[in-house]
Image 1 (tube, rainbow, N blue to C red):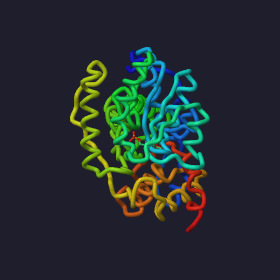
Image 2: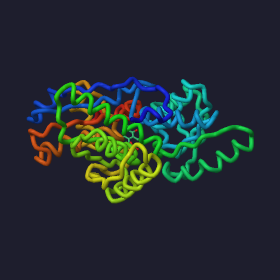
Image 3: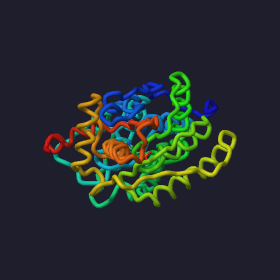
Length: 329
Ligand SMILES: Cc1ncc(COP(=O)(O)O)c(C=O)c1O
């Protein structure tokens, strides 16, 4: 159904759908699963790789020779974009919010290795930085280049198609295993993954509750953004998607004290997934969704017999920035 849209192959798909029996046992749950988008492949994986398959397809079709995108210093999106650009042979310019650190670690180290050209903006936050993409694009055009701008987190209709496709993939895996998921949890930054999942679930006729765990913005803001993105996708892809009234569920209770801050709950979630399942969560995104899962099950908000999928969206390179903080307890 999505076959008519330009796309390049970057990810190893389908990503595994695995049962987390040990964690389920600890939580007294009947059926707990994990969708391993931390294993999408390119440069330590993550959710942006699925989005970039379509974004890069679009960029190449438009004749682009240079990608320009923005993010936080430890942006997983920027790291995956830099790796994808290297793989395809495009130039990549990253505008990063924050001071240039003395040590290049985690995602930033990888950005450099992939040959991305990095500019630092100490006074901007990464969402605000997206306004700068336009002027960089203009300058590059004046130099005779063909640049292609990607907003933070590839939050654009063509990027969200990656998660429409992901839900069709999940549907096939559910059919093979006989699984009927009732809850699907994942971390939310921009909301692009959630927008794609909601449309994909509709197309795939998956009836699970899709719950986005916000790591950064209040639920109202994210719900508005996701609704807007879904409407843009209806307009952009009328032949693929029939309009419907989306139900958008976002939980803002697990943002903690701020973006990327290590706290007790986040640390416990990382330790619990690691010790019980050998699965690595990152402190910025997936550990917050992991914490949400643990708390919701323990409080009974997610019933012990509700088949649940935790969607791992990647982010592991950022973990190495937290070393000692992670082990303190
Ligand atoms: C590991 C990880 N999980 C989740 C997200 C959030 O995805 P989205 O921006 O599509 O909501 C990001 C975004 O940067 C991420 O890096």
